[in-house]
Length: 198
Image 1 (spheres, rainbow, N blue to C red):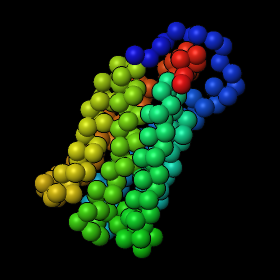
Image 2 (cartoon, helix red, strand yellow):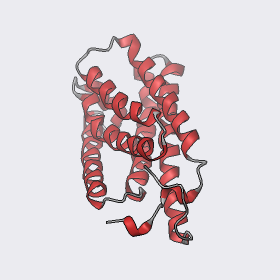
Image 3 (cartoon, helix red, strand yellow):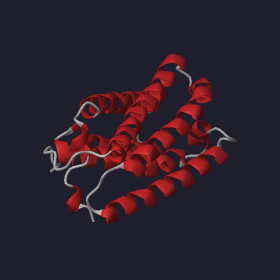
């Protein structure tokens, strides 16, 4: 469980890194919501792809902010998370190639397109699960399972075309709820006891 006790005064670096970390979470939720909104507004995957490429790149950067500035007591978990994010970068590159510069278009250009988002969803899922474990944000556990599960089912063709957008809207709503509960916590919650860091 995370520590809500303030063990030591926060340094400027502590404050800045927590703000960057939480900004990444918030931006990830907003970008996911914007991707869902584009799908709802255009109601046509081809038209929704135009703005979605930029949104997907921004989502990738937002998740990266949280990955780089997450405060974890066990350094090997942070190294593993960074390696997963490097895998996500390679997959975004592959999607951009498939989509001729637009990674969102790449998702629909091959049957395995949704699977290329698994490393990115894994990074975001790790973050939500970590917060769920530390601060009882139980929707974080659900997101950690739902996001990759949704992508696997979409890759396998097990989600009817009409339900794909509904799944994205559900994930976006859960991420926004999770973010609203997380970002207003006192900053020292994310730092905990620095003597415990490995």
